[in-house]
Image (cartoon, rainbow, N blue to C red; front, side, top):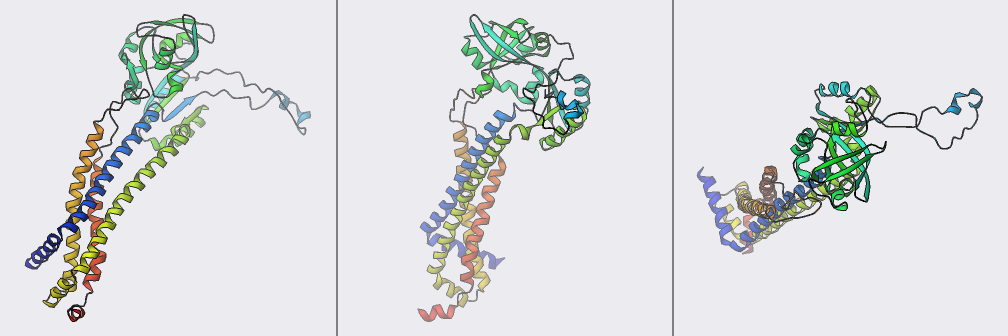
Length: 420
């Protein structure tokens, strides 16, 4: 124990005798860790905001009845054309409806699946919005609004009104902000909605939503399932789409293929629907972590260079220590302790600076028309980033001190003293 205290005392003395070099090494760690925490917190927060903007509005599995051309065209029914080249122009899809047959029993079955968190029915209808002399094409989607709020965070996108207003209002509609601005509509107004079969419905505007995606905001609106069924003149079991929210998103492709085989419907999993988006997210994350790790490595090389120079300057001290009975391992541990002291002090200071800068950025106002519910810059305050930062500071400084300490361990005191 006494020997360990002596080694620690010698390490402190060496550091304090070269306070400028020590401070420079510690500041290298401090700014490296601080920059790492600030950058990774901000970039992952930004990535999470962009991911949520898309993924919150995308079901894990989207089920619908896809209208496709008939597998067998009429010409294929005649045996005399079997060995001939058949050319069919203007292939028409088979007669089919958009609705999902036996949708309610299927939804009940899916809700009983232990991997399914919820199955949300929808009714989609192609419509024209009419306000005065202005007409716009778009889509009205009938939903259970409170389930959309619970499972898809829909409340975050409502910029006027409340989801409860749609639930409690007969023949109400929640318009996309792009439609409202184009047609100069406000909450409380009525808009005429005309379906493709000619049905005209006057609907009361109970609010506006803004998803941040212009194509959606300029065409889509939401109403209740019952109102949408009236609009398409469908019965109470008329359902066109079912959106699944799963407990484990990684099971989405497997469950989608199973549903297609079991119910003979089209099932699109979230990976298939957002393939390009996932690629962009992966690249952004790779860039973020690559830059962050580079900052930490640069700080480690700074410590290595400073300790390496310190050993050259302390050759006489090393020779004296060995001549007075200290072993090569004792000398090695002195320099490793110096590196660890620099890493711990610099890491703690960097941790405080990183946390402070992250909270400072989190409070800076950030306004964008695409995301009205976001008021400040997004920052991800994940405790793991702080743990990784301080751990890397200690580990990197240990190795930065270990490599030069090997040279100090092999120093021959006789050669040093003779050289003097």
